[in-house]
Length: 427
Ligand SMILES: Cc1ncc(COP(=O)(O)O)c(C=O)c1O
Image (cartoon, rainbow, N blue to C red; front, top):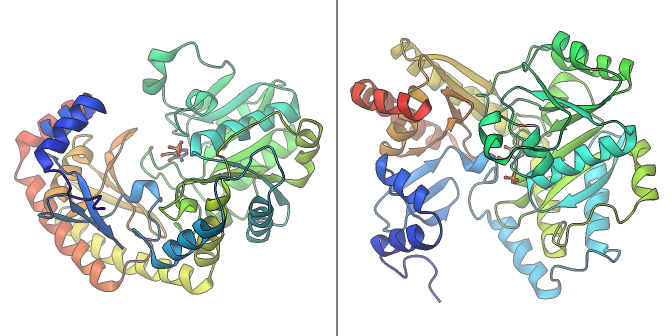
């Protein structure tokens, strides 16, 4: 059976437009990005026609942290299929028990408990449910223009433009500017259950918080009896050069979410991990949060393998070393194009290229696509190109990125007409 290239590309685009998303098909046609994903291996993706190859510097926000089709992940997945299936979400489970224990080993000692999910939004929803259930309060403080997914409570904690058509959403969500601990303190009142942040918000363009931001927020939450939830769905699993991004700030959240990369790019699974002392709530209400496919058994050993790989010291050292050499190259490009590229934001390989105009994010997405790199602008700050290469890239691929991005900036500078179009996209 052939799965890639069984139909011609034009026919596939027509089928996609007719039966999946006419709007997406039209959008990609408009911006000349007619890429249909075909073969994929390691850091690379090919168009279904086989004619175009891209180095994946988006990685679906971390799903492909280990690159595409990592051999060790594929091996575990194939092995689990010899014995397991989804399992039964009502029953006790050997696979979920073993993965839960592994997560407790790989997270700070206070964090011992996990509820599994399928998607990141679901993991965030459960984090907020647990905070509300435990505190018996309803108010949730989140960053302005945050992104935590498109399910009910996660959506309510996000940017307005995704919410407007679906109002009224759950009440009690209050936004504050990201990185401002005083604003957090001022927003908390006697009805506040939790503060939720993505440790570094990707969709806001990777603004790196000051070193004292999280220690202050932790202190404020402790003083006021409010829970701190961190969303590590993009920043977790070694992306920032530590296993968990909050380690950079020397704090421990009460609840945190893991998704995307936990799948190994092969089997969807997410986790909401939380402190032992919050567990009495789930103990009293063991069936209050149900997910039929959450922590499906065939996926648990895959997630365990991801944790083993990404927590190795040598793996994290590699991430930091590649981050240093890639950022040196990108700084070279910044010097050459200093009127466009203002700043390289980074923690490990969690990178954002901050530019001088909101049109440049979309324009550089197109330019880099045309020059062999796939990267996507930050939706809630379109002056930033999110830059998330696979964590397994080597020096020769860093050189490829450097060559391609130099070409992409030259291309962008030559297309003021595209900049205007991209500005309109941003509007
Ligand atoms: C930080 C963050 N949280 C939550 C989500 C939602 O994850 P999912 O799309 O798996 O529901 C995303 C997805 O992009 C994300 O980036």
